[in-house]
Length: 121
Image (cartoon, rainbow, N blue to C red):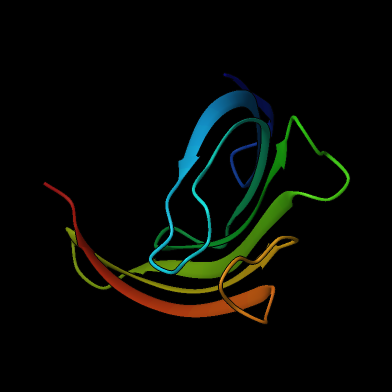
């Protein structure tokens, strides 16, 4: 794939990525395995709020080459990252994942709340 930082003024940045992938999906239930190529797009916006914290918004999508209209996924996440010590940071993030074809379940949208502690060395 390819990627490009479209904008960065030191406080705000916007990045875009475009690529292709070969996917192998295997399911735990009776759903038949799937193999297909896909187009993948990704955008990331970051706002540096101050020296120790950032706000980010990420949007990614993937479309099946064989059925662009009916087989696609979209992942959106937003969150904050802030330093709590010199080498330690905390991230609080919310994700929403939409899958047009949702094998094995009756729902097409999943949400996830993430709290992560990171150490930079």
